[in-house]
Image 1 (tube, one colour):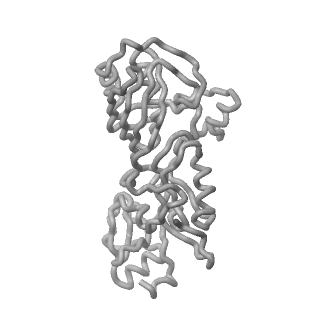
Image 2 (cartoon, one colour):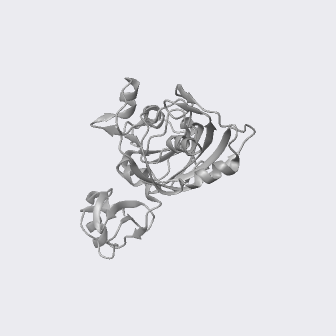
Image 3 (tube, helix red, strand yellow):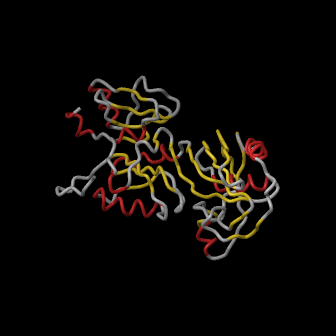
Length: 293
């Protein structure tokens, strides 16, 4: 368990939290500030309040790397309940329509689910953090306001469906791009089957390479090194005093790939910077630290 340091040394690193149900992502960040002992904490991608599972927190210097985490693909498990539509597209909302879907088979569901695999377009749900004209949709929804939303391109890499003991409930296992709403997938699946549906028991099992296997309850969370926040990026080892000086001063470094994002590390594996398209994007090492490299 991490406790605030008596010496007030600012911690830095990546925290992989297993978010409990009933907490917003902002709630987790607020609580983490007390548990970890610093105000400099942010999260890499909102998780619905009723959902559980992997939520990545950047702490200290790692907050500058959150954008490299937020774009990573996500994995989820949950349950689709056929026959009932809700205001929120999940079981936290009010029921707005019911359908007799007792004749739907697992084969029907799998055929329909397959239509949503690949590059598709989704309309964000009203109960979401997407902004329209500067206002978040969930704030508008709480006021009973519904606005037109533009469909956005997303990619569903996998949409597996298995039956449960309840003939109207199907377990789903989804791998998708960042920005995909599994609630919307559930609702769209219901419509594709000629009725309606909603989602329940959503659990995020992975964000990029970070899985539930390393996630911990917030009170037991352990900080991983700052470099863990960019573990998925190609790495370039920087050696030699002159190249280290170039990194620390935000200059271009010879031999660093000039396409995409690259993590620059020293021989000990410590993260020095992230370069994008050959240029410094985030520099963590300062010139005065060079004597310690």
